Image 1 (cartoon, helix red, strand yellow):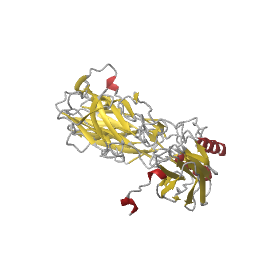
Image 2 (image 1 turned 180 degrees about the horizontal axis):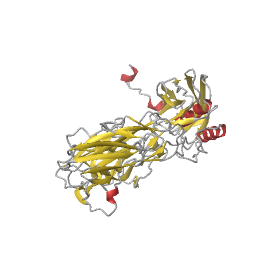
Image 3 (image 1 turned 90 degrees about the vertical axis):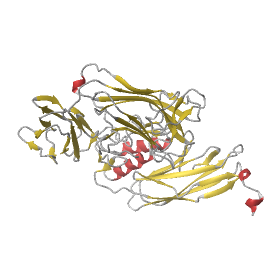
Amino acid sequence: MRVAGRVLLSIFLLVWASFAGAQTMTTVYSNDFNTSAGPEWSDTHLAVSPNHTRTFLGRFGDDNVRLNLVALPEHCSVTVSFDLLIIGSWEGSTGYYAGPDLWDLNASVPGDCCPVENLLHATFANCSCRYQSYPETYPNVFNPGLTGAEEINSLGYDLDSVYHMSFTFYHHQDALQLSFDGGPLLQVLEDESWGIDDIVVQVDSESCCRAVRYLPTVYAGGTDVPVAIEVDPNPEAQAYVLEENPPSDWTVSDINDGGVYDAGSGLIKWGPYFGDAPRTLSYSVTAPSGASWNINFNGTISVDGTSETICGDTAVSPGSYHPADLDADWMISDDELTAYAATWRRGDPWSMAPEMIPADFVTNAGMIWKSGGSYSFDGTVNPPWVADDAAKSGGGRLRAESGVLVVLPDVPVRMDLSVEPNEGTRAYLVEDRIPEGFVIMDAGEGLFDSEAGVVRFGPYFDDQERTLSYTVMRLDDSSSSGIFRATASFDGVEVAENGDRVLQPVGLIDRSPAAVQ
């Protein structure tokens, strides 16, 4: 990902108190790309969908495409709307040997390194059998592929989807740069690409907020919550001060720029500052251990004798419970674990999101259960749940006989997977995806999910090495090679096998003189 800027920012759709009434919006740019893109775009390439229903800006892969707008009228917010075309075999958040397939939208001032506002950082999948984060932020959300798509397979490609996007964000400068980014792990253009269509950029006609607060989206008990307040007083301001009211019973620290905490009033105070220079004020609050409720922030800025409410984010929520924790008590019981593991093994939908259970979530739950059952949320790791006994995440190796094996139709072939978990691993499992044209004859101690085309082994709640075997057979009407790729998950850590296994029909052997020599 090429996102730069404030680490505190994820996605901020700001709601300001001064916006109580209806806003007057002015369209400053629009393009349906039916004729041209224009010099305002860094890449002006246009494409036509195979069924000729759309002409759009694209196709792009792991590219950065920029739209630069200048001479904007006075405003305080921007709304950008467009159609995002997702084309090809996007794998979403949890692809096999692929992905995560990410896409980003950032807003900034042209030529200015800071600030950059990340409006979208999300994965997309062009199959409901995969997981994507959209419409939420990657990596902590798993939604079924194609969630939120306005159109599915409407363009004439093998796989495609169209999403209508709309973002409103704080911006008051007279120039704007929108940066559209395909993730660095996207495959070649023929496999995975994207495009833009029907873009409209509008600005409001309201007066700006002079102070905007930025908060993380979630917190965990016992951890620090960073807070930033971006202050930009109106030109010709003579003096200003800020007062911030952080949550009571939370420990305040790291106040910058001469600010002080008044324990009597419970307020953090900055200033007075003389002049109209903008600045970013910041502090941290530490959540009490075990805190698990929504927390509110409020404050005011006074400029030349006039006070107004600090705009922006006003609340943070506790980190989400593990999906296996059905009674939401920050404990994973034996019944919850076995129900979660059995549902994953069968490939059935779970009662909480994500419905189709990721393998790493299962071994993460197993590790927590083996560690005593209690856990907390930690947004810096993935999966974002850690055992309270600070158990170290496991790992290991998954080995198979890689290479090309020529097979005959209707002749069973035994597949062996050697799993070597690291010492101290508390839970692990294995998934092997079966390519089209092959069937499972005997799943061994595994369970074959025919709908997903996956054979699943485990979970195992120990660190013992195992050789997992099953029998597969190529159908007599299949003429294509089959590529087998397995993954293992150890305590929430995914590991791929050591190489591809290719089962190739006899008819695909190269018998040319050059090949024989």
